[in-house]
Image (cartoon, rainbow, N blue to C red; front, top):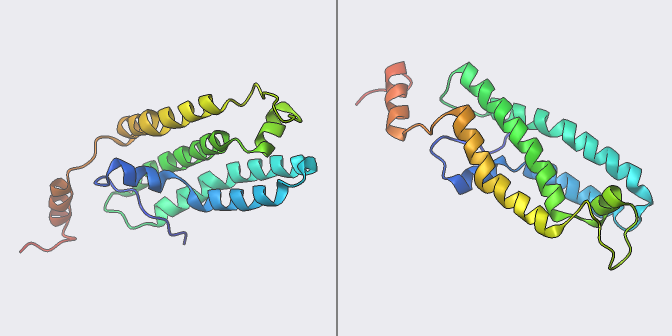
Amino acid sequence: MILRPAVRNDDTYLAKIIKYIPSEIIAVYTAIAGLLKPNTDYLNYYLWVLILLGVITPVWTYFSVKDNDQPMGLIAVKKAAVFHSIIATVSLAVWIYAIGDELLQHLLCGKVDQGEVCHWYQPVLASILLIIYTGLIVPLLERIILGPPADSNTQVQAQVAAGSIPQS
């Protein structure tokens, strides 16, 4: 069982963003990238790490969402798990691009000497992408795909009607 904080309908937007970020995967990436940084001869290893994390992230996130107890039906949980898996995977890619470490720049542009510009990585563009993705795209997709946030009173009433919460 993979335990991650569950994204709930009544979470604030900031709480949701924090929960969408696959922090376990980012920790693994950061540790491995730190090992590979001193010697860029490990570029093939870096590429394999990116591919492996790109494959593991959606699977990890899918099961972490499914394993959390959530007061929704099975279909809604699966839909949320797939949505969160996709968002987490894209978030990882956006985050890696936004931090733009020298391994990524070396992968995108070849060896870049001090003062040279890597045309495939622009720090300002990376920042703009990160802001638009986390500030606009994710909340819009969440609203379109998962629907409007449920009112907590509606959730409680649904739980009472289902018999999971006794009436007083």
